[in-house]
Length: 495
Image (cartoon, rainbow, N blue to C red):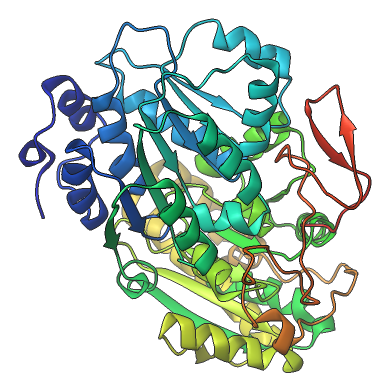
């Protein structure tokens, strides 16, 4: 692998990159950065976690002139979380060059964004719907754009943003440079590239090289009504440092996080209905280790860059193979190993086989753990913790107390009592979850996209309803929400 110093970066950008702790470029960075610096359009096929933000962020910052007051670069992102994270990383890359990046997304007061725009950032990272709102208000003008980046283009397509993207690309100067990144390349993405890009260079980082190499993948065949008890037993046996549990709907996430807390686990949920401040608070607690389990929907977790996740539990099997790849990509990062476990009801085995076919990796079937195994797991963990205290900590202040207790009780009884007190025994508190119907295999895996590039729901129909943080428009049921500057559906499926 090449070092960043070998890629021909300016000293100011190189200083930023080195300050961020980057030394060697990842494959997508090594192949993309030189081509982008030459001014070529680039199509990059790569999954989350491969370093693609720096792959487009470094040449983007290099191409932009410091000291100017016009917006010169735009990055389009599917979700507010990803927009915020990309903007944060671009600000780090541009810190020594003096390039400012501003995230623009739905769910935040538009007046606040207008005030921030008056500080004249050179780069905007935006969700398409909210960018369109600013274009209509003329608070963002695209006449000086030098580079446009489409990040996670397939996800934007799946969320129904294709028409917004086309409108935006028609508004920017024709002599701009365009970089497109997507995990998959459906026909509609290829058509978009053919229409709006100039002789693009294609770079592909194969999924099998970046998504599953360091991840042990298992599945359990579990009836719907037993799923929650099985999850708790696995948590007791495996005691993950940081875990993400994926649920299919917002209600599922709420009920799971509430149920886990009832049984004594430290868990919080994240989904599209939460306020931005609540999301930020949950993510901060999870990254700091204050909470051990994050329960999330696919949409809420898309693009989250979290280090240290040891376990991913797919409580509900995902709607499509691409979502599965993104989910398990939350673990097994930076050369560390991770564990992904997927719960499958008997009627969902077909979906599991399709995932195995797409990822070219067969999952190992795990037996359903028993209550006795869960108790033994917690006992083993307690013994390991006790031994670690003996090996690593100063216990001399407690020796006197121990001798006093030994004068009254034999050592085996005393140690057994200590182990019982320290061991988290499985909680029997009743938790009832609203049942989620199993996915129907023919419709669910007919394809994530149809020929027109519209997302499909689990009944195989075009799904044009957008979550409320995307500033989108539901053509059949939508109505204008002037306060938020977005399109507010009257009703829409849970994410």
